[in-house]
Length: 314
Image 1 (tube, helix red, strand yellow):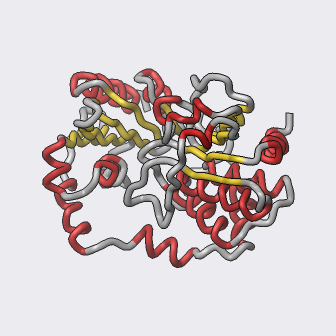
Image 2 (spheres, one colour; image 1 turned 90 degrees about the vertical axis):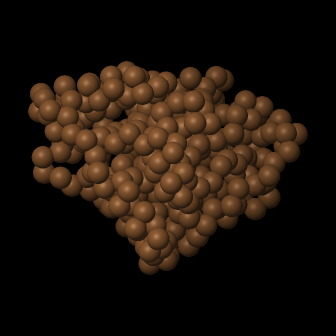
């Protein structure tokens, strides 16, 4: 099956298309969602296209649509960058007539009645998959779509450091940059920050280290409030405060989500796969960048123990 042509076939079939991604989005979730929405709008102007979900300070200039329940009934839902039901940005995908998933993570899907499950972990980002769909189907990419898609590719690869298929990724990066994305504007947004926020990062400079070199932080709800940052700014935003240390091959950031009564774990590694550990706790992601939702701090300690065992065996 040619999944990239099948995706387009579904797009052509439906007049109303609603695009979802995961909650608490990173730039790849936003990039693939917004980039795809522009791609469809640019080539099929008679179609109604909506994007739905929550936003945060990692959402670039994205704006979500307010959509009445009635609009979902005969629509196609496209879910990007996630295939696990509890993480989808709006559970009204269940109301749509057909569902398509486009995801580059290794997780299986538990979403019911999926018409097309296009999963390919050899892509480094969901945004890269959207670019490939456009290229395969000879769809021109507008400047605005290209900015979001390029942004998703840059961030999910760690500025092209973590690649599954380097030749293809760079070919697709070259392809999307022909559409003149606003690279400087995007970089200014992503890599500059207010002085106050930079100073707040000092609150997260300290961390603990296990016997075999796993660095980790435990961020309570009180710490989040003291920092003045949002949840995502602490959970995902601070995990790489522990990166780039020679003696630390694995690092993890655990942040209390008081609204849901859970702890969100973000796990990272250098040169070693840890995604199986994330999966064993109901999570998933990439080989060296993954995470899981944990029920309490006791389970956090179990994860730390497993990560330490993995580091021991390097």
